[in-house]
Length: 83
Image 1 (cartoon, helix red, strand yellow):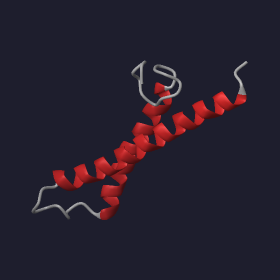
Image 2 (cartoon, helix red, strand yellow):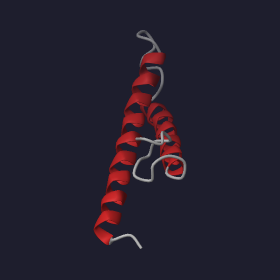
Image 3 (tube, rainbow, N blue to C red):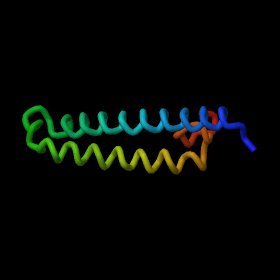
Image 4 (cartoon, rainbow, N blue to C red):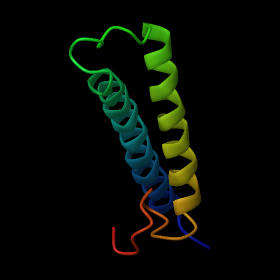
């Protein structure tokens, strides 16, 4: 059986990694929606449409990160085995 401090460190490392990835995905998706609209039509998407699009991307990132735990390193939200 794994000792408790090591297990807690693993869970904390994984959680911090996953939260960072989800937040980064949200910010990048929101910026992408704004840029994709173009300079002239940058404000044609409503604030809530932009937030919704970014939220969908962040939710997909969250699901991917949770599934990646079984594929890659259990201490990371990456599918790469050495991350």
